Picture 1 (spheres, helix red, strand yellow):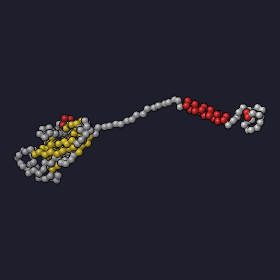
Picture 2: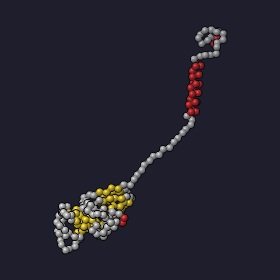
Picture 3: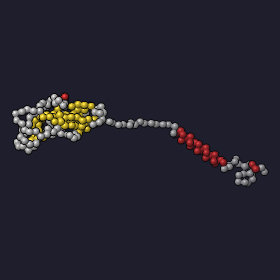
Length: 197
């Protein structure tokens, strides 16, 4: 009997059934796996997409501060009668705005003035005696320029304008009063400076 007449279980038979060797189940498994891969590949063959944005908003910025010497200080003056003399003083503000940002600085009328006109005039601001009753006031003015020819106000053309550099910019405030014929004592006012950009 030839080897091919033996069944896989070793028994003799005239006609062995078709070869049901151990390779047959393996082949079936491989064919099944390939079929699954083909189906998976078909499922993954499509695509879909969407979009999203990457956003950033940058705003211009400005800060304003007073650094020493901060005050417009007229110092100590002797009371003089019958004479009109210019008494000058100056202070400083620091403005820091983004490079290229236009800015304007306004100075209000102070705490001792009822209101400041859009176009200030001489004597619109005043310092108040810190203890005298009834109240005593000394008029004074603030200017945008060292020649003290252009009043500094809080709106329109009375604002001081410039352009930011991204660095601190020193802005001078020029003060003047013309009369010190008032009762002895300390006088003061408080000004609010506002940067507009």
